[in-house]
Image (cartoon, rainbow, N blue to C red; front, top):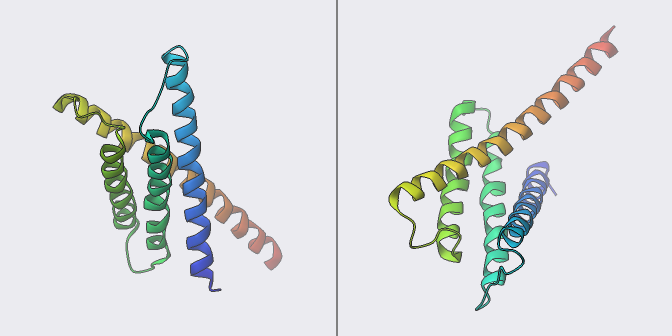
Length: 145
């Protein structure tokens, strides 16, 4: 299996894992906030878990854009985050994370919060990979001496 395919599978599995972890943490917060009376009906939980996995795929698959040498980094980020955020928004409405009763202002706040969380996660990964690259470069330099 090629490196690109392995990288794609790895980033997708990591993204799905992160999406499901965030879903569980948010579920715990809602359960506590509602005093243990948080309930879902009509396979809503199953729909939300499947939606979380789709969101993970939506953020994981577009990471292949970072393998391109021709695109500048800002374009890569826009493609990756744009696809992920659009998929997240569609899934969120489909499974009921954004209620139909939300006002326009509430919708903007929700969208802004979504973007902030997505960019925080992206920034953490970017910092991690930059540190890894720095370590590799230092090791290469030490081998040259």
